Length: 517
Image (cartoon, rainbow, N blue to C red):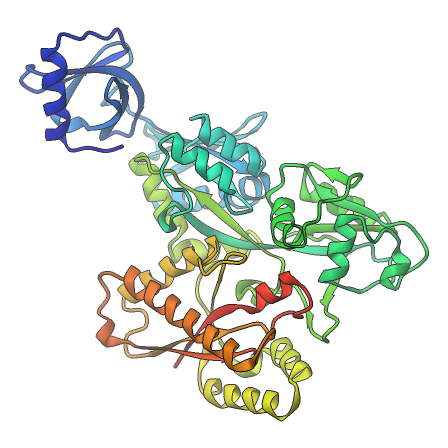
């Protein structure tokens, strides 16, 4: 934890007066030498010391103390050391591009050294000394959180939300609440795309069918409209965040387990190559790399169809979107690391993210007439005159407006926003603080599933839209909200994104969108 210098030295006085002596690796002394604090050095960011003492873990401002002992860092030749651990998809495909982009924008040189588990990037001034090193441990999401809990990593790369048991252990370890909005940010978006060999005749499947394949209840292609042949399921490794995310979102709500016997692959590239030559294979691959395989269209029994495309993933309309998270504990990072994180979430990094093949987080605006699949699905499932009237009311209201590619969804069975949506709250709040929507009208639009009375669904959707509006306004602490017209509306079940015949489908339909004029 961080405490003020005055509080530290007040505690130090009592400690020194009591006559305790610790044989630890550093001692921090006040400038006049009257007070000393001994402990084990846990970290130094060029400005602050992080040490373990009899008082617990403390963060001490280096400008007010001198350091003695064999563990003291060099203040002249200080090199910022940052270890980033976790998902191979994030660590191999995205983070190297961001580090190199950050170095170029900061006027630094990035030198890469390959390692057995990832890479080390040394950042230096041109012709000068090394200022910092970013060490990447590229394994999987599980290992990333384990490294953080073992104090062997500073930042976690993840392709899923942190799980409750991991968050509880992090709180117990003094890492803060990693489910809080400021402890995780979405860098970019990927998606899990069902793929088959070009020789396979099947071109679509439903989410319900995918769940049955993943759980082992469907094992033959004939059940999917294909040949009478066994399905070979291809997945990433056991610790893959993308696979775990699918388990959390698709299997757990149905109380199903992932089938044993799937062929596991160490990388997305290896998975794609295997499926391409397996006429009876079905794989779940990264949208950023599907190779020569054929992606399947997701279809529903109620008539909806959705394809994995940049826009449908960015708006989270595509149901198997996979956010690429960075989790940062409640600990002060070196200034170089803080500058890198600010760059990675800023506008200048979004081009780098797109060039790396992933879906960036820069907000875009989409006109109503460019949302083909959504409107076609809405017309297909509208029931009777009441359903068509609600759809007409929505089109009339939203027709003159454009939809922001920012969507808010909720945790299963909860009114709490999920991790990606909490990140979206911060991003939209920052845009309001920067004046990005001054002089415009923003409408938070709530939608619901179609289960139950339409009037009740409309009321629930309106309350969710109001809740998200308040969350964004509260987060935009320095924004002049008098310069923006903000309101909330709801259209209930008028624009479904999935069929309501499963818990997962109903969850997807419960959302809040942002429309602008």
